[in-house]
Image (cartoon, rainbow, N blue to C red; front, side, top):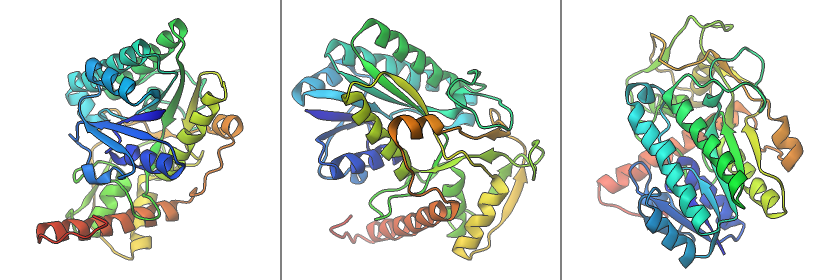
Length: 339
């Protein structure tokens, strides 16, 4: 039996693969490598280049590798882009998930874990949101993810498929052993962009909106280390295997940092000053979004190891330096065994 990881060559997916193979799970990855990287997939896993929305291909993989569980990461994730190009998001997130679910049902997959987002909550107040908070996404990205959640609930009610929906808050950081990290050159994640700017890969970083109703006027977000996030997935798999009921869980620490605070922390940790510019708000950005993650802790016994902004920033910066060195070696035609 094996676990199928969609989007396993991407940022979070590759960390999930590491977690699984470190725990001696058999893992099959399907990724079209449009944003992921073949080298990011641990060699202990089987990588298949393909489209996760291809029902016939996914069905063949499920049967060949005796897949009983699917962890679905593949999709598009940039909120402003979703406002500009909603059709891309409804295709890559909603339609692809629908096809993946059909393949799962047709081939009797037992458990399905879906990576959702805090964006399904939309504009909320300053209090941490729990899983019962009214869902009112304000961007096509959030709505495309909510559509997938609804499909998963409906399909689970009609078929013997249990599910776990994990609503991510702001994921950051990198594997402590520098085996994977956020590697997309033009990523929009704040900590990624700030560390790139510290290393001179970008001339400046922009703060989008300084007039929000927050203490310093910039957005407040709940940042969760990627390794703590994938550990929540691993615990959820064990919970479902043990007969646990389908569930929805927030993935966050329950504390928030403003954009200015994060940028200042990157400057402090790296001891590098860099240019910061102020810009207009982006479409689809709520002022505050912080998780109430008590359900995750109580239901699964989740105990985060990296709940510290300094640790998150340091790991992201160390990965960015490693990646810069790796790319420089490749440009000069030099490859190491670890590459």
